[in-house]
Image (cartoon, rainbow, N blue to C red; front, side, top):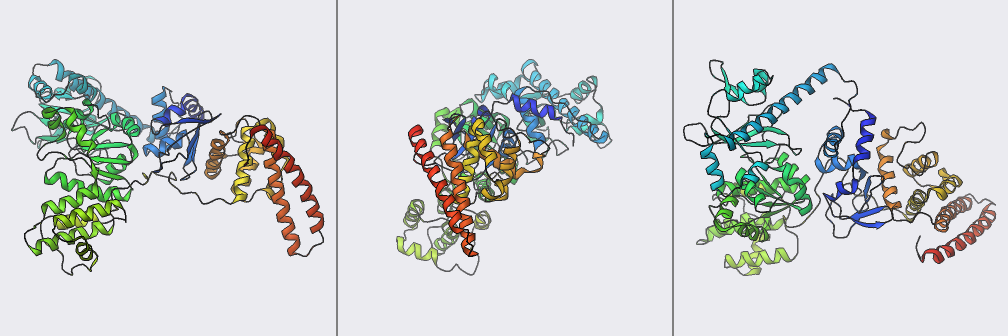
Length: 623
């Protein structure tokens, strides 16, 4: 894998507006001289515990423990590795990256991939021009515009049209310097049984399929005439495009979904385009595939809540059932948008206007409610056997649903629809299940979808890769004091440096990570707390990097200079040290106890004086 120079990494770091970057994921507000805070984008919370230092460009959540710098933030939120995070930021902020020397074979693979991506980008532009400029594409233009889609919105999605000729793209690519093999490997050509190569897409509306960076990886193509093969034809899996890894429109919807806290999932390309045009810019599409775990992962990186706006037919409902099982593994909140039977979002907008879909989205219900209503709607209410089958299907749903208002409401609804008293219905739900598997259409699929299902109505964290959602252990009072002292040293570097030099690191800090942090800060420059100290390889200690990020974010709450508070915090560490020494001396029945107690009393008097100055200067009653 090619590596970029350290200078490139530093130039990217300097160019990034970290507050602006994080604001695409959560709303921030100023909470200190060099600190901003907001709701954590890595776990569900109502009170902000997530903070950033916009100058040092680090973040930390005091609720879930997520911590890191601007590169880590992109890795966790976008689900990419460091190299991809660096490339994303360089592209966004206009920084040209310089590469280190790389293995010749790796360089060859990289250059080949870049050529294929450039070919796909060029071809998408060609299809788009052909749609709007050629007479052959007139029928396609009429179809798209007739669905209520504007030229402006279609151009934003780079929608195009492929000519009916057998070799138009192939010949144009050759003239541009690409070989037949490259055109074939990019998925733009295919071979006949006789070995002849020709354009794969002909006389079709072309929907570019992009990654989250907006790079064209392949195409979805809709035929305009019968007898031209399948109605929809996608790029086959190849080294760039893998069916089931992406969702349509993610590059355009990503930032909007992060700000909205939700992403709308629908089925068709035109559904996504119509929703964006109607103002629902957080919409993405399935691209004609069954929902996969990779796609759910991509949805989870976009937002915590997924709104399913899938067709109300059996295929759409089965897709929702599959989505529930996959979303449960990632603790995503899943809601269902009620659509009229037989209508997709694009048709509903065209028929009743954007307000109709907006209203449907606002009426979205937790998946668990949809699940209960579906069982009750499809079951046989006329016989006791039919009621038994419905109760068997509802049993795992209610078993996963915790106590609360949602459970009580759904219990009342189900018992009413089944004409069974509430108490009797609950008894039948909690009774031992029947030994025979219930029969009836859809019951097997329902059971599969319920495996691993949570209640579907609550929040939860969107699990990222790495340590973004690691829950921090509870800190002792001693550790709190030690962290507070180091944070104050960072906040007031002029006073902090001599204070830090005066402490006994091995005695005054309770854990090895905190001792490493203290040694790092004492050996380095407190004005640059995240920079490596002389002779230190900070990249080799990710635990220390996370701890330093937390301390920097915490330091942002403090004013630039509070010497009395810093002195009081240092004396608190010294008091704790004497307490431990006295305890050891007593255990050893040493005669040093009285001497140590006298020294502690003097430190306590110094602490009281310093604490009094803190009250006078700041009015704070807690250190």
